Image (tube, rainbow, N blue to C red; front, side, top):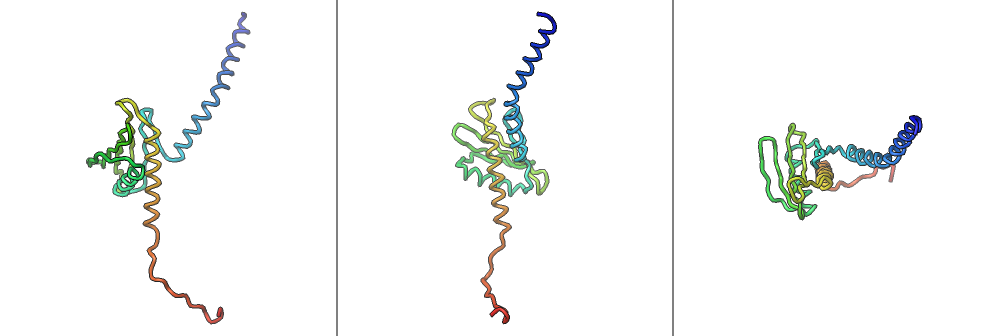
Length: 162
């Protein structure tokens, strides 16, 4: 083979490889955009993070209500100077939730779902707990914002409308 044929073969192989991998890149970009849209951050070690505009107490309540709704048993909770660590169990997973108060109204949530051993993490479960906690928090905030119904008032029609 001459140099031109070798170069042509290499370029063809490169282009063919890029066309094949294009589908994978699209899937990766889609998954990345969904996580970005949800405001979630992930690490390669399977840890998920999200910062909420909510107080530590509101986040702790939302986390407990979410774990209860997801039928996950709370095994322990520990308060430290930065916030709270909540440990829960689900089948063969240990869920570790850290709530860190950044300000009085901003709390960072970190979730790790340990699966089986020290190095095995379940990132999708950790992500789902954050998504569900965000939904719980939104529902709880909405229920607080609803006006309290007072005694019914009788409407009177003006004389022109009778």
